[in-house]
Length: 166
Image (cartoon, rainbow, N blue to C red; front, side, top):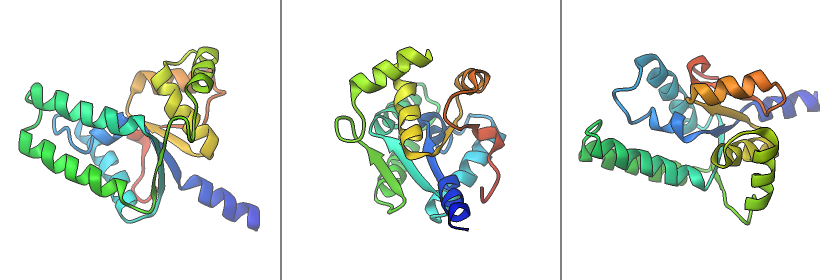
């Protein structure tokens, strides 16, 4: 019984690739993916899941928002709203940031990335997922397909498969 409870808790631990988080804000992305990402966001806000992200996540989300404003994919007002939500997420008790040199080391992740043939930046997320025993959710289709073909990666999921109340 205790093992089942542990497994159930583990199932609720997620690492989010920034590509998933950007779906919350980029209105020109595929509606089905945006809907699935929104379900995940609702589960986060309602504290049904526990999120772990590397400190890199914040850089990538903010960078994605800046790029979207410059490309006129979203307005400055929409970007500001998005930044307010990001700030809210960071303050949630079920949102955990893993910092370099505290929770992960650059050289360890670099070694892991070279051994698994993924980019250093993707390896940071995957390393955090593996160390937390968490599911890794991505909206990067190429990365998802590469990782699932390999078969020996941490548990990886495609945001298009997210079910409401997962």
